[in-house]
Amino acid sequence: MPGDVGPRAANAVEVEDLSVRYRTADGWFTAVSDFSLTVSSGQRVAIVGESGSGKSSVCMALAGLLPLGAAVEATTARIIETDLTARPTRAIPYQVPGVSVVFQNAMNALDPVWTVGSQLGTAIRGRGATSRARARVLAGEWLERVGIRDPARVLRARPYELSGGMRQRVMIAIALCSQPELLIADEPTSALDVTLSVDLLELITSLTADLGTTLLMITHDIGLCRAYSDRVVVMHRGRVVEQGDTEQVLAAPSADYTAALLACAPSLAQLNDHRLTTMVGVS
Image 1 (cartoon, rainbow, N blue to C red):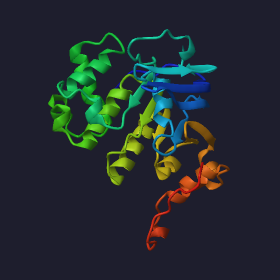
Image 2 (cartoon, one colour):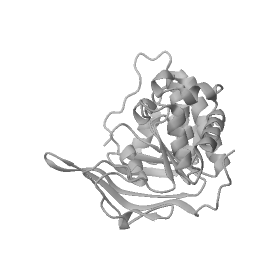
Image 3 (cartoon, rainbow, N blue to C red):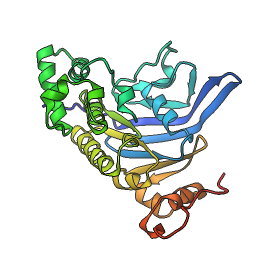
Image 4 (cartoon, rainbow, N blue to C red):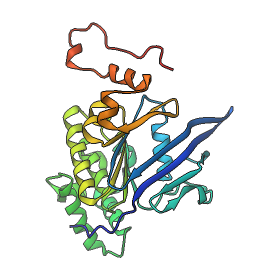
C-alpha cells in the first residue's frame, strides 16, 4: 500500500484577511472579504453557507486554482509551506504543493478521453520515480482502498462508463494517492443520493485520518457538517459570520444567520408542515 507519511506542519492553513475578487465587464466584483482561518494539522473543518456565500472561492484560492482574472490579497496566507502572498502572478492556475481537491462533479473533473488507469497512474507517478507497471499496481490498490470491488475493469474504463458514485470514488483515489497534507472537498456529495453521500463522507474522513491529512470540507448540508467536522466556519455574503467548535456553534449559534440556516434544515418534525422554513430578513 502507499508509502509512509512524513512529518506534517503544525498548521495546514494560516490565513488572515483574505479577499478574493473577480474581474467583470463592469469592473471588480468582491466575492470574499476579510476571511481569516487557522486549521491545525489533522483537523476536519467544514465551511458552510448558502450558494454564493464565497465558500468555493475561499477554497479554490487556498488550493491555487482560481481562474485567470481573479485577484487574491491577504495579510497572511500560508498553506502548508507555501506563502500565497509571495507567489508570482501566473498566466494559468498552479496548484499549491501538498494540497489536493475533490470537486463537486467528477464527470467534469476527470478527463473523458483517458482511462481511469491512465489518470490515476499519472497522479501516482507525479509524486515520485515510479515505473508505469508499479504505478498500475498501486492504482489498483487505491481503487480497492476507496471501495471499488472490480479494480481491473475500472482501470480499463473511461469515466463516462462508470456510475456517479464510482466516478466520485475514482476522484477521491486520485486526490489522496499523493498523500496530501490538505484535502479540500468542495461539495463532494452534492450530486449523489443520501445513502451514497454518507458512504463517501465516511470514506473520505476514514482515509484522511489514516493518512494524517487535514480535511477542509465545503458543504451546505448541516447534518453532514455536524457528523463529519471538528470545527465549522459559517459564511454569508463573502464574510465569516461565525466559527468555532462544531457542536457548540450548532447547539447555540451566536449569529442570526447561523440560526436561520439551522432553522431551514429539513427535519422529521416538519413532516406535517405545509411549507418548509425559509430565510427571511437575514442580512
